[in-house]
Image (tube, rainbow, N blue to C red; front, side, top):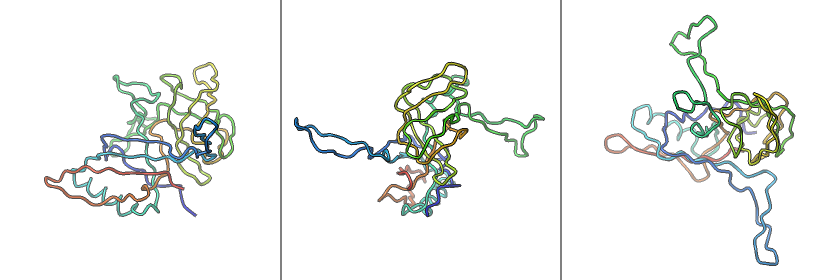
Length: 243
């Protein structure tokens, strides 16, 4: 049985891609044509599969080459998995600090104001949610209370849930806001895609800061070790959701 829990997480900041894409592929199948000759699409019950690409990661320091070599050694072949973050920092519902959207804050000290021995502190998401009504596997509608919003949930946002029952990190986005309660921490009823990969219980935490999903290298993709003149190169990495 595949293991999706306790996976390593791709270091998005370290790779510093110049462009990232994420999409849900295979959400429907061809249902034939009607009398007017138009195609009819039928939604897949599983809701498609996530795919993401990290384009033109700048590989220049020795540690970059080591890290990329490790990625290729461990994940070529697509049979080992990792968590891939979706970079939504700029357009997510996050508050701004110094006019910069801030999905999380770091350097938080202990209660006695002391930091860890290396000078670092705790980190904390600025926006997060919790499920307020249990939902079953493949549910397409969920209810969640959201904390810390800098703006309402409106068109669409990515978020992720860590499914402890076996599916690990999975990412979702809503395509319709069905209802919302008034108040500082509103409860949203959201239509989501893809549908839930695993049932969720009341109180399950929902992450908006760097949502992520269990992934593998896309079929047919491998990550080679590359050296170029002046020891600077750019490499693109392709991922698809792991099942």
